[in-house]
Image 1 (cartoon, rainbow, N blue to C red):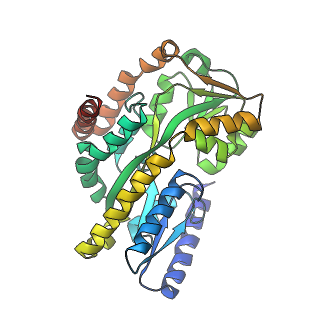
Image 2: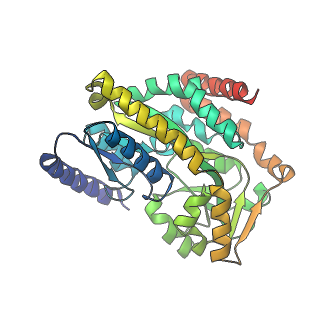
Image 3: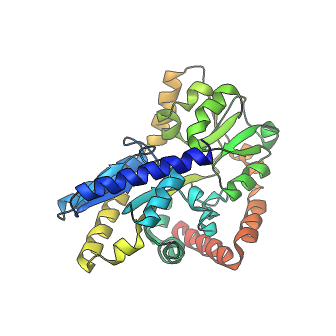
Length: 338
């Protein structure tokens, strides 16, 4: 989608929301997210909505991906106060909050799901340092949560970085993700999500990455031949509120929102149990000729060796603030691994 079309769509969406807001009662809050209703962010949003509506007089109006435009559109709407809540990956907020790109340092996050959940619950970096950075952008960070291990889809098998040589690989418009796939040996190609399926179908790109459930639900397997899981990342997302809206609430309402967030957080971790394996099995059933490879520790080693290079690029991009975030995250991860 061109920038002009994206801007136009954002304007139309904002106008539509403005009109609906005039008709809606004041107790209706609007919440947009980057996925469909039956995907992980949608499941989280529905649980959050259920909890808010059960414990207050407010109602939550949900807007799945595409309803109000691309990710940049919904972020602008959240910052402007048109939306009260938004769920967006740090991959897209990296331009606003460069430090959020830390989630794209390969092999930083653990693969163990219990350890990962405890990290997100207790991390000082996530729960104390990041909220200050989001606040500077007019956003109240309510929570961050993992969505599942990211796997690559390509047209040819990948067993080493050499297999990614000259592969045009779609990445989000995120500088550190570009650095990461360059380090992996690919040719990173930033594209809006809405263009990815068609670009794979026509050969403009040959690869992309996403968690298993998303590969299944978006039918990426229809336009690709190989799925490769190298254990390099777990897709992370962040739920935010417009800060002026949030600060204007009573302490009781703020606590009610935080309680709803906490319930949805625990729910979504439980929901994801076995989801990756189930999704990959479903893909194999839908397309038996699909090649699915889970690389061994030995095969992963050359990819793992690129982590220090990407870390250095992250620190160069973000300076002392990014370095402090990265060091704190490593300390938080060590604490939960003990």
